Length: 359
Image 1 (tube, rainbow, N blue to C red):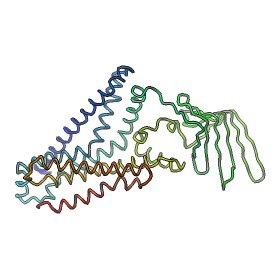
Image 2: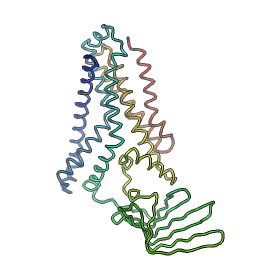
Image 3: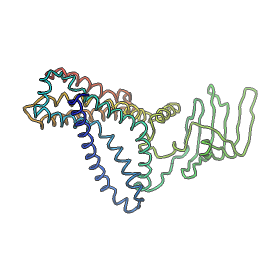
Image 4: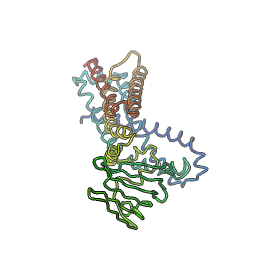
């Protein structure tokens, strides 16, 4: 890159980091004031409070506000450049407007790539620790699964039943596992209870019996303990609040497949999370382009007008995304289009605005 590219590139990243840091710090202060009474009452260890919780919360919010902060950053410092006639001077040397946007594109690609890696593999691990801290020190202790008579499809034509489940012992009572073929029961396992064995990552059925039905008759098998592998884990009985945020991208894809296999409700929430992790980094590139286009020209209304216009466009984007995602969560709209439609619409807006820029 040339001197001009480095000038814009470094200014972009420096301003972005400053804005994100300030906004995140404000959010953390507000969060502390809201929860300080819980912290005084439950007395979390200092390390867990500031590292396990607030460091991970800072990472979460820095990622969450990044698309909007990138847009505001671009509008703010580009409008300042335009107001000081720097952009006019650059273009008057023969540099095309498209060439002028190169450092913006490189910086946005760098941020988008980093955000995609973070939301796919780093932030889910951080969110797991953060949410566990909140459950313990804010929401009042260990989560208990209180549902009764649970029916779950664990694989094609295989259905499990538990009368209840205990999170602390990882035990499910009065367990049955039925295999159905051609609308006919062919095998049924019944156990007093099943218990999770973490060292084997398997369930152990205790005091079990297996009834096998064939065309020629039935057979019964009895035993004290039987290790079995099911598409079911203790995590399936933990709190589902913000659970979609705790999966890495690989785990999220597997979880979606498992829910679809079971025919479970609420799979749209996880699909929206998956598509959002791919769409949000792309949104950073789109909003950067729109930000440059909106703020690159010198306006009679001054910098304030361009910044206000930038805020208005950012607000419309967020509103559009929230509305489409909300409709998709209710199953009335395809999750893929719900997440990507705002990007598609604003890409078209960006192309239209680009055609109006003096080159």
